[in-house]
Image (tube, helix red, strand yellow):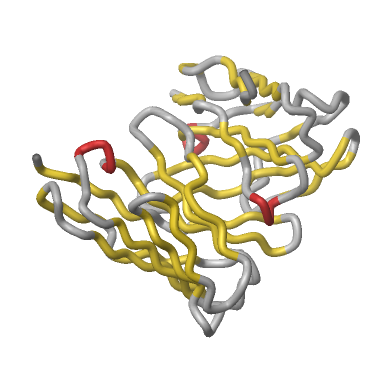
Length: 109
Length: 113
């Protein structure tokens, strides 16, 4: 199956700091999705990207579809305690759906 | 409320004892899918279904069965569970397919001893 690698694996940041994380694939995707998983819950869709180079925002979150179509980036500005969780990139290939390995975010008040 | 409901939330069972994890969605979604989540591996797709009676294997189907007899339900069956199937399982559904993302249930934590 497809491999989606996320970095960093984990982050510990101070409240108010900006966060950047990325996701890379060994093959091309035509859609990139970013999910957040709160402890004890299922992932929730944050942002969807459908075109190479596309930049899309959702509140303090901004995601970009890399121009090579093999990567995507997620930025969180002015982090707050409720940003804590695991962030996953994901992408479909046909009807199959692949998730990245996840970036765990801890925000220190 | 639009949701995907899984049951049970927690399950401890013994090796070889058949079990079923139920999944139901109330959004009239065509697509449904099962995932398992393991530390360091992210979520991996087990099986998916595009419609009633239409299912296909995901990345890690070995040891699992599914059925889609009704649009709203998509149970996951472990005929003979083994300890390596200890994991966190998620059911998900989508109106039009993977491209627009899935809505996930709250998960089932399965322990096989």
